[in-house]
Length: 159
Ligand code: FES
Ligand code: FES
Image (cartoon, protein in one colour):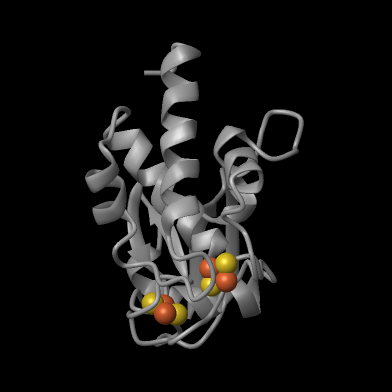
């Protein structure tokens, strides 16, 4: 089956089995390996991407469901100069990246939250990342990083 979807603003088309997941389509067909495969059953959030702006577990979404739609992966999250954006920089500064396996999904979860709720409480941040498992950080640093990015965006007038 031929798939056509927009990934990080670029129209992509590729042939793949009709039942391929969006996760495997991204990784295997488009060679975009920033999206991680963890549990493959919707429990860890490592595979998180934005589908038409909404956070989804790409292991649970068929590429066919994303056909004709817009996907944002971690490769599409960066500063204008291609370096880390403010949220990614906050992850680095607050020690929210350790093994890094969960990090792409955490960043996408953070972006989804800040897009819909620019001034989240810490509880709201915890709820927003509840579907994303991290074995390393204990979550405190991740919550700190997302909170810092929220404050930075408010101060920068991005809200
Ligand atoms: S790999 Fe998709 S939720 Fe774990
Ligand atoms: S930094 Fe290792 S799983 Fe989160």
